[in-house]
Image 1 (tube, helix red, strand yellow):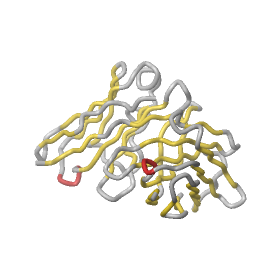
Image 2 (cartoon, helix red, strand yellow):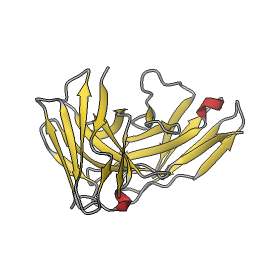
Image 3 (cartoon, chains in turn cyan, purple):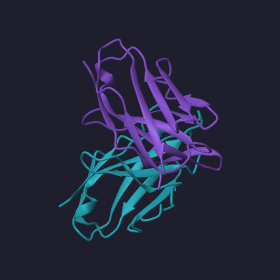
Length: 110
Length: 120
């Protein structure tokens, strides 16, 4: 199975909004509303920030939001803050009953 | 709340078997799915496989021939074995609870802190 495609890096200024794309196929992202997003700071374990395309886990800021159109899911971070600088990964369930991660995106707050 | 902790050797020789255990505390291992995920240094995440509370498994096709995941409900633990390791298997290995949505494995939460395994 191939990794989902994400941009290597995205940057924005404090207060701005940025969007990270996650492109898969009709065998994963396009077939299920089972896309999740994870935030990972250096040396730390990933943290769930969005699940089932649009849902927030308890305690996660609503500055993070998710959406999906066809084979591409997106994560939007609104009101960008310095603490949002991290790596972000998407993940999807697949028609082979497996899971696949995205290639990862580094967000820089400039 | 549920916490996960990986344990096992940090150094494995090439061609040998990597063995890790994940201990679940603060909740029962039953009624959930559980996954192993790894991250080579400086690289992205790779899903290795999952096991259900009943013992059913599924693995990443690229690792399937070398991976076995098992569960010990009496100890609230699940384990990973990866055979015939090579340098490319060097990674931080994470265990995570794998939640289901609409009966399908969906998202990972929480994660263990991860353990670095070096093949050398």
